[in-house]
Image 1 (spheres, rainbow, N blue to C red):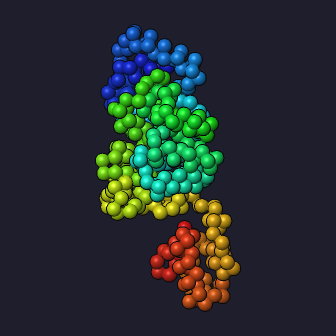
Image 2 (cartoon, one colour):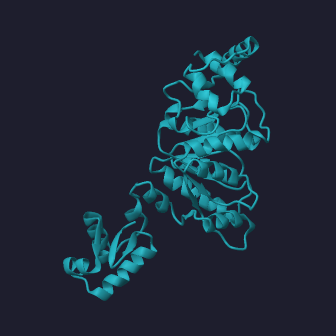
Image 3 (cartoon, rainbow, N blue to C red):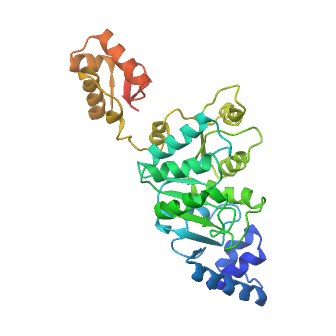
Length: 331
């Protein structure tokens, strides 16, 4: 099947359960000549504007998207498509965050991106923009999924941010160039954010936030949902706190997510000043993987009371984890 035929299919909107069968040529599909001509015009427009196209049958089409509801038959993009092959998480939330939300979204994105994780978000005002900026400022990579054509800057104030995203990652959309950001595009856009992401982090969201649409898509796909706990009286925290009650995973520092992904946070020892005995315990746990209080007392020659005090301090700093039964490990 040629690219122009696949593009023509997007104009005719086959049913979700027909898409793979059509692509694999298991069933025939009557493609209208008029749509073939429109598809050729779209391809020509993309060439003129320097917009790339990835089709469902291309080798660099993201595997994560092939099994989602209504997989996009084509992806239009600006930037580096190699970013799509890397590990990714979604960071989402309200368009009107509090100061707390702004700081958390930016810092979490910045620190997680430093570890080679690509940050996925939707380019909207608020949390989305801060998530993209955090990744950019850490010299990391980010993916912006739009509900408009990739040549349409929305919101308009993000023009400079979008240019930076192109340099540090990729801007993509399932909508052809020139498509305006209609409101009904965004719920469908959110399924792509959820599909690309290994997990979703919700920073701040109201009770009726569009953030919940992305969360629902992610849950339907079997993805894990992480949440930043918020102030119980803040309207912007009602969404995250509700999700926590439903079983979402609380995240109070970037290492919670990195550890869940099996990534050791290499900056831990640099972030905190460790004194002589703290460093002894840190190095012991780093070498052994885990250790008990009795083992550390014997091997490090530190009295029990002092060990307990040091362990508590390291636990508060978020450097180690209490595994119970007197055993500890690095977080």
